[in-house]
Amino acid sequence: MTTTISKIRIEILVDAPLVRRVTELAESAGVTGYTLMPTIAGSGSGGRWRDDQVSGAQAKLVFVTITGPRRAEALIEALKPVLDSHGLMLTKSAVEVVRGDRF
Image 1 (cartoon, one colour):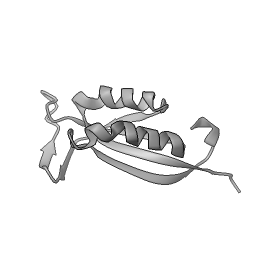
Image 2: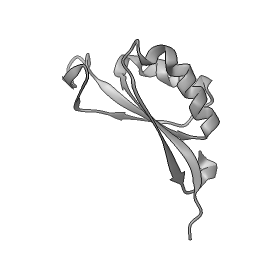
Image 3: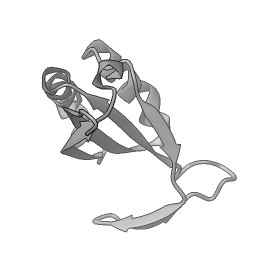
Image 4: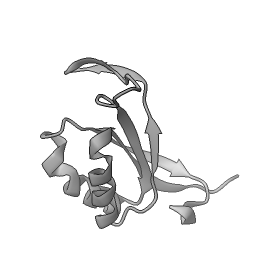
């Protein structure tokens, strides 16, 4: 049987212009490994949106990281000031990873 280790996965839906701030806050919280994924469209409390791919005005990305509980909480604390003011959507979930030394 393969051994797994418990970690925390954080996903943040963020407007493209705010990505740099989110990554800086992540790094200040000790989170140095992450992935940014482009999005195409969505719908939420603010209505429907779509990345027009011309101006990038409505472009959004998903920031994903897997880290330990202490760093996950530090990241959430660091993001508190911008969660509401910038309408970020943040999810936190428990995950099991193989090769846990990489996280």
